[in-house]
Image 1 (tube, rainbow, N blue to C red):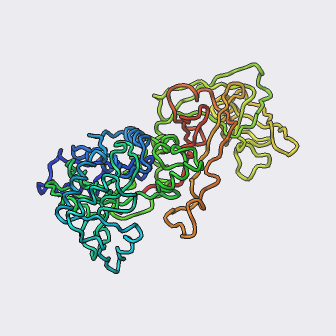
Image 2 (cartoon, one colour; image 1 turned 180 degrees about the vertical axis):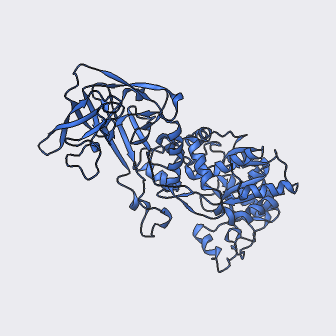
Image 3 (cartoon, helix red, strand yellow; image 1 turned 30 degrees about the horizontal axis):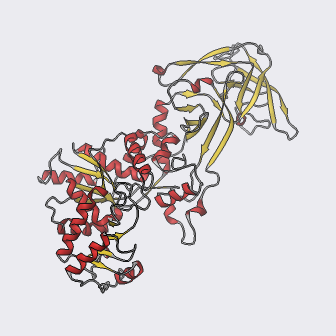
Length: 547
């Protein structure tokens, strides 16, 4: 992993003797209320890679302090995604495992006069909080006695009060210029069954209270998080200090990952799934890691993208073309080549024997002889791509056209002699004659043929479905959506195009490979949920040039 400002900080601390190489401890703390997306991948990439670089350890800790939408399904999916990316956690932990300790420390804060039970509801609390330019007002319940607060908190814990009627708040400073320090809530009532603790608890600690406690208990040296938590850092430190921890984690913030034409809101991604606008969390158009996996992206391509995107303190918008570039570069080097005709039209070679089958030897990868060769069958009737034929060709059209010659890739030169059209003028069949002395070589008379097109035998091929994907959203920066609009206003109605009658060589279905270059077309992956279907990962070429 390339050095960055986080590593510069750690390097300085090691040089000053504050930490030792091999003793750096990080953690990745996802909330199990959805599937990880590419934005989460940046966080886990930083957490795990930092631990690896310094010979330390990284814990996986599920932030399950809000049980409303959390589920074991998401726990399992998150573990699968991390493993798929090639990372190993030291310990797998749950925030809920610390509920007893959090409650104990909350009682200690009450006894020290540092916390109190407040009866203000959510709207009243917002009103009392003040604004960025005006100080807040003390809650009328702020000066309750320690005894009364202990009693009320115990009754909260015992389930005597309804949701929203009471909160436990830290007693800090209602005039603080940092709104997060204006007596924040640290416990709330939620009569909800928890996926780990069942019905044991009806009060749950807030993230800003639980997270620093968990970090301190685990011996986390560096709590790495996204930039929106920068304003929460004073509260993080307050909790660590007031709870009496000797080893104090250091919180360091980095900019989140923002991608063009991509939504990173887990709430809205959930909405897309629940309303059926996409084919589940792993829809290949989704920015989730399971969606990218089904789309055909590789762990190495994602990590290369995150490396190139960089780690900074300032938010920026990264072009999704960089992600596409990274997987294209990898697959260009590794993916075996196969022939696929996505929009087929039949070609009959009139001077080729009807019962003859000829095999041409073709390299699986023209740049890698170690990948071997395969035999591609050639017959009298073949399929070519419709866009490779023009009845009325434009200037400089070097593919198939009436009375024009073209090379069939790896095979003969053919000349179009006639076409068959339906009542609407659509070409349904093309007739050609082949120069049978030009098999995979130059014409004997030395004439030049500029165009080369791909093909498959019509008699020896398979028919498959192919999905061609475009961005799910039409707006480049989803952070710029006007107030009177929603994400739904920018959904791309053409984000997927399904072709149902694609012709492919039979070698596509053989072997263990799942990702291929369809020659002259793009990179595709076998859909792991729909047999006989291939998803386009990226197009063959792009004008994008990474810095």
